[in-house]
Length: 355
Image (tube, rainbow, N blue to C red; front, side):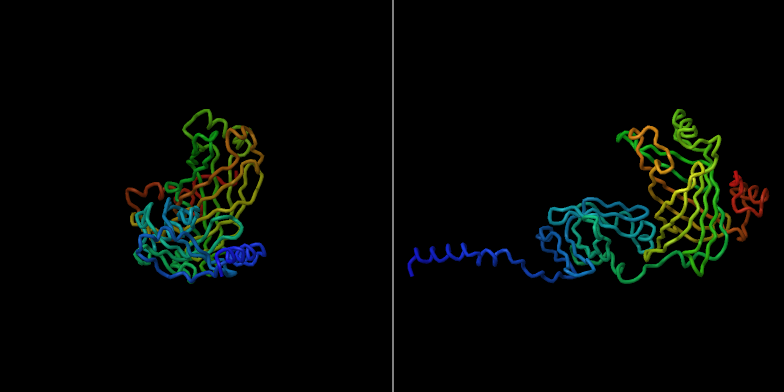
């Protein structure tokens, strides 16, 4: 058979679509190894996904950012010319597993076994991390629960320590900067249920007159009728309605945020940071960290949009002291003694939450 006949036969097959269909037929998915080879071509492997209903996947690539933060640690991975946002437990929860802010670094090659979040693009929740040399850095998150601080919280009523209570509202100013507003006075309580933590209740009251941005004209505007209307509404209150526990030791606080008499549902991602007697007071103390986002327009605050962004970030750090715990009063605990003696039966000393 001469060359001309061979060419004519190939042309005929291509015209029929037979070879074209074969070329377009997808290749079978290859099994993905559990560990990463130290082969320098590792970074070219990109990302692959196991084809099953659970949306489990394996990504191999280079870290471009590592945010070891609350309420969830976030890793950006460049894999197969795509950026993936990977979510891991919070910094607090990972520290319980031996992590630090230096556990990963930008530029490092890793393999991640994860579960893809449906319908939200290139976002996945990490189950396992393996270094390029095959060493396991994080494992088992998708299969079993990690140690949780919730098991360590005894039943009882806890009061917010006003000296260790920090809450910020953060909003964006014309895209140039993020402006934090600190709330300097607040009270709060936690009624903790050990048998059913999801039924535990948290309440925090904010004194609107104590909002401080560091800019006098802004503080006056925030307390004025266009925003919080302090003269008629001196208090902002968060009351939890539900608490969902995560397998990583974190929780989601769902509740009502009351501003100017208007209550709207909000959700906060939170963590129990520590449950121990305070070494200075010997009183049982629970640390709570929480973060979330709200839209101020939901409470009718629409002035200055879009110069001042509608989205407001809430960040909270606080220490709650069990009401019936005994303490050793020392020179650094004079204020606690004064607060408790002024109203020993009140879980929220110092600010009248019934205003």
